[in-house]
Structure formats: C-alpha cells, structure tokens
Length: 374
Picture 1 (cartoon, helix red, strand yellow):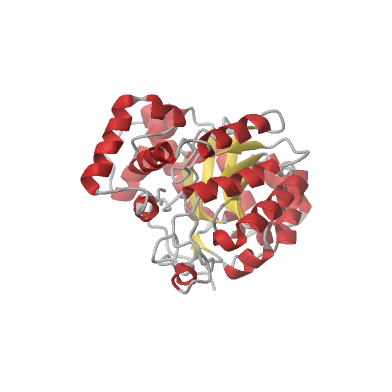
Picture 2 (cartoon, one colour; picture 1 turned 90 degrees about the vertical axis):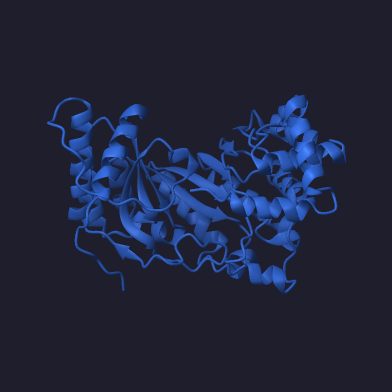
C-alpha cells in the first residue's frame, strides 16, 4: 500500500517529458504506482508514495513566495534549505518561460485521490490564474477507472493534457514487457480522455519488440493512433541498458536488437499506415536518430516519409557518419552532413577510436545508454 511522509519541503521528481522543459514541476507522488514495466528503470529504486494535497499546496505556496520575490512583491530572504533553493530556482526559470504550463510528477499523478487532486488543481488555479495548461503522465488503466465527469472536471481546472506511454499497440509485446494494459485498453483510454476535453500525447517506442516484432508493432501501433487520433504522437527510441529486465530477452536470444537503420524502417512503416487522423508527429527526444522528423497529419505525411527515404537512400558511409555524429551529439539534423567541419570531426573520431561499419551498431548502442536524459 502507498505510504505518505511528513512534509519535508519542496520536492522534484527525476524525470519529465522534453516538451515540459519550461513547465513548473510539482510532485504529486513519488515513483510509479505500477513500476513493473520491463523496459523502464527510472523508478525501480523509488518507493511509491502519494503526497497529500496539503503537502503539494505548501509547495505551491513556496513557489508563489519566490515568484513574488522575483517580481518584487515580497521581501527577499536567503533560501533556508536545499529544498527551498529548488523552489527558488524553479520559480525563477518558470517566470522566464512565461508561467503558462505546469507538469505534475512523478509517474501517473491520477493515482492521487480524485477529491484531493481536484483540491490541488483548484488551489493551483487560484494561486496562479494565468496558467493555461497542466499536464501529467497517465496510465491508460487509471484513465479507464475514472468517471467521465471527473475527467471533465480536471479539464475545466486546466489539467488538460495527458502524456500516455502507449509504447506499442501490439498485445504480444505489451504482455512481454509487462505493461499491464492491452491494445484495447489504450484505445479506450485515449478516446475517453479526449472526449472529456483533454489533449493526448501518445508515446510510441519503436524497436521495443526487437527485429522479431518490428513490422507488427508498427502496424498495430498505427491502428491504435488511427482509432484514437491523439493530439500528439511522440517518438521515443529505446536505449537498451543492462539494468533493464528486458535486457535478459536479448541476452537469451528471444529478441534481436535493431540498429538505427532498422528502427527508421519501422518508423517509416508506422507513419505510412497512419490514415484519417490529424495528429502532430514529433521526434523530440535525444535518443531519436532523426530529430527533424516532425509534421502535422495528413498534410505533412509525404514530407516525413520523404525525409526518411532520403536517409535510407544515403550511401552507407554517410549513414555511418551521421549515426555516429548524432550519438556523439555533434550532429542534430541531416543537413549537418553538408558541414565539412562536423563531418571531418566525426571521421577523425572514427579513425582515432577505430570505429567502422562492423562495430558501429555496438558503439551507437553504448552511446545511447550514456545519453539517457531526464
């Protein structure tokens, strides 16, 4: 059973989506209430607990104090603790971004008692009425347990965007990865949340099922998107770290690790099979090989497929240079292949570190693990 702790000051969780980089971060619960997914290790050592509404409201009060200080509406003082300094820093950066969005941490804040979460939302809106968007990670099974009226009330209180880890629409992979939901659950939750006026970000994780499931995963995931028509489809390539349970599947030979080229081929099949939807596709994650792969459906579909085909049609040498350049953080977009300074730098690295096509996959895998971000 979840436990609560006495208030110990302002808290920050370990991660947030890249799209929430400019949001105020408020911790609703610690860890993940499910914490069984074999592909995720973010919360493995974080005991799950739900913070009280009063604790979160004290965090809001502390941020409000520091906001007032920076806006010269309150008498300044020195931060009294590390937690106080975190609140001070968070307030400063939030002011710089315009104070429009808030992200609730950690995994799945919808597990807080609905009345308490409503209380937090009401208090947050009263304290910062200029807020336009409040977002959270959310699990499909939790959404499906909530009454439509409750979701509608959340939306009215500006909790109007859910980040849902769909990962894949393939039931075999979902079961293998111990996701705890089915394809049907994911479809039901997405449709239910959007009907309540809540925007949906669906995360798609290509290569989760290895080479063995790549084709079916792309097709099944596209089918989910076509039925839900989420506001955003965000691509999240996977870094296979040795501390993940799913690593055992690759060690035992149950799954085979795809390389960047095969991952892009899976993504191409996925995008090719998106039909009749108006979602925004975004590749806004450092682990993705093609960061510029983004667009609005249906009008940008051909452009996105054309970008993928351009990459896949490159000579092997150029593919290798770009792949290593991306994983080293030297290259961000395909146009960087026309930058002779960057290309020469990657080539020198390949020569000095004895990297060539025969060992590039292994090198890129190691660099991806090192780049796992918040």
